[in-house]
Length: 391
Image (cartoon, rainbow, N blue to C red):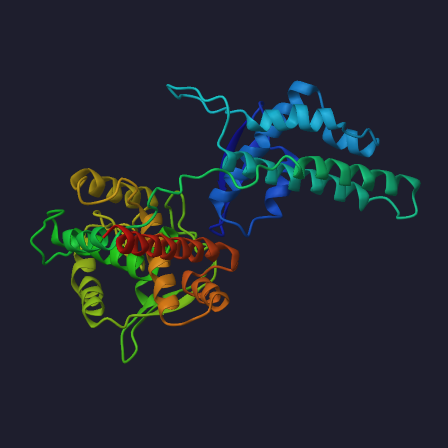
């Protein structure tokens, strides 16, 4: 089994799961179509998780639709002792060191997708028979038991490395800005246009918490200069002329971010008016995208990853080993949580404000930054206590 991504004329990218004969598998395809509002990478991951499920079906000789439609209920041993153990196994190839199991987070993701897939099958069949059919209650009870066995298998609070710094310290952030600043003495990159591009890219992510897909989806027209300068993050239909793989996407909410720092506004304006044109001169076709590659084409996500790899390699003593676009977003979120708290905003409103600033639709994803700040306050209080006691 393998996952293929189909590029549609509309610009949409929709993955499909192919069986061992190279033919599309109907139900996984229907499952993905119902979730097509999600990002392409998420759908690809879902199909790979379903591939693990179908490998188990094949080994056990199970036809899921037949089992449900004929009322042959799954046993607890089949789910807890068979399927769950299969979902724990690591099926990746090409590693020098073979792992026996996947991480708790990966297992939970697999289990979530499998649970939703089982629910889809049961709901399709239940929707095809009348409510007063004697089979209805029996099949619904089978669904509830099967889903409960799956729910009971989730790993609560997967262990994480809480001591690892996810974002940048203030010292590291200042060094990063300094080494990318095209007018400072620390030189990273030779081409002045590329240096300006790198500086503007990192400054936007560090100061506004944009995801890589959001940054690479920005058009020149999304930067507004005037009495109130701003960056507009706008969700748009897929661009059929964008040939980048994977195609950058804005998966969450759009927002307007004010550029209230005059120096940053000036640098972005310089990049657009002078250095971006220098990059675009190298391209065969003109582009409306803000961030361009060394060859003048819209910058791809792999190129963005490579930038942070080069920075980590060049400055291993001054920049963290986990430097990435994600760590910049984490730095922005943590610092904004601290600023909101010090400004006197209560916890519930801070979560709402962070969700607005980060373009998130869920408040739950903001709790990690609030908890992190509470932990830091606790550690600081302990350090102050120890200084008073120990001198």
